[in-house]
Image 1 (cartoon, rainbow, N blue to C red):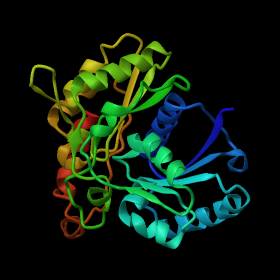
Image 2: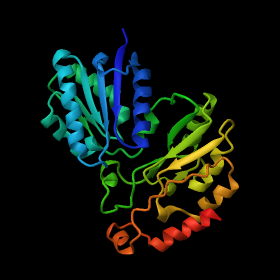
Image 3: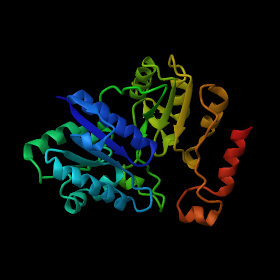
Image 4: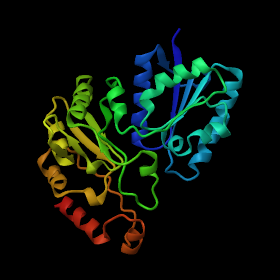
Length: 297
């Protein structure tokens, strides 16, 4: 009989993408089917986010609700992933010992092995892996499944900006770009399943610098131009951008690549140069407005 999997996702589009890849991975590795009801699940996964206020408490409130299910179903496996998991690690199991495994954004590909280890060790012995093995996870994930005409595609992970208010470099690591061929292959696979719009993801997506098969490096504007040539792809979006990395070539792509949707998420953060400097954003308000003016032309 197939095991039932329930995933609850907090936070950003990257987490939504990661949750979909967890489902793809577990459906491929063992007989697992998704359920919309946690009460019916054999495996409960909570994909967490550190950005929102009181993120840790939100996680433990959810785990407290799942504790009741664990008490009635001792073989139920509970896993915590995402950025809070990366921050807290073993502390999650110390506070909620009914949790079986804790994994970070860069180790979700190890889920099948972690589940096997949990089953072998039995209840009460938590498995924790919140390491940063660069971008290894993409080499160990199955082809993505499509669910409708639009899909997320992660093209890079992490951020190297270290803004004073942000935990991303500490929870997802520094910037690492996926190879160009891998991104193109994933988009082409999705297009073959009927996907017509892709949303390219990264914590600092326009800092993308992916290596090609011949050793060259391709930037975000070049990647968008290449993806636009894939048969079936009619629309391209991306998120989230950083003003410092918003290059002239990417601005020009809005005019030159019809598939690139005329929509942009470019965080303002503040109109005060003093505040921007304190936040370590690396740009002034005037520089931000200058780039917007160029986009509007």
